[in-house]
Length: 95
Image (cartoon, rainbow, N blue to C red; front, side, top):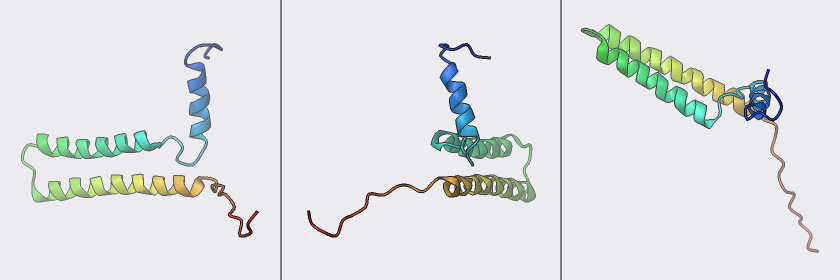
């Protein structure tokens, strides 16, 4: 438990409020980090594989595409879960 007044006290409330929204944790910074991590993991796996065959390369490429597609799906869920934005009403009559 975080004591009131502690610097982390506001952070726990933010985490709780952002985690209950659809896709709430995947803010812009997290999406970018997850994309970079997926590409880096696939790249490092390919670099450190002893003798990659064509099947290994295709398998890694497909796994990367699936990971990126999941991130896109989560972004779509986040977009659809947002409340509609309020727009300013435009008056057609002059004051």
